[in-house]
Length: 79
Picture 1 (cartoon, rainbow, N blue to C red):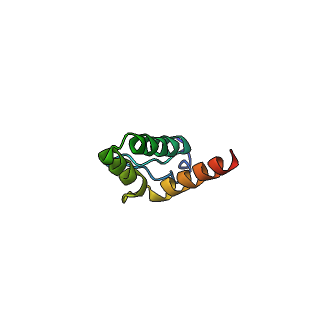
Picture 2 (picture 1 turned 135 degrees about the vertical axis):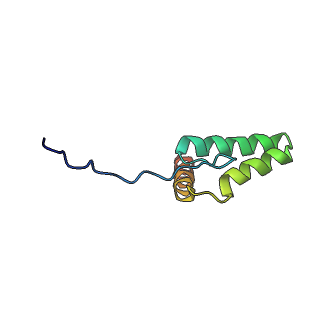
């Protein structure tokens, strides 16, 4: 029997498994920013706090989150 070479393993993007899900995609980051705006508009201090944790709290996927937020900022500055 001929064995096949092992499949190439590509590193995947870090994944957030935190209690407060941190955004790691452009869509998720834009949604969290929208939720912060909503919470500010209705004076929901707890909502602001929770969503800021999602944006700035410690997370194993902090690099992916930072990139997603930078991408959202780039889209917002264009539009």
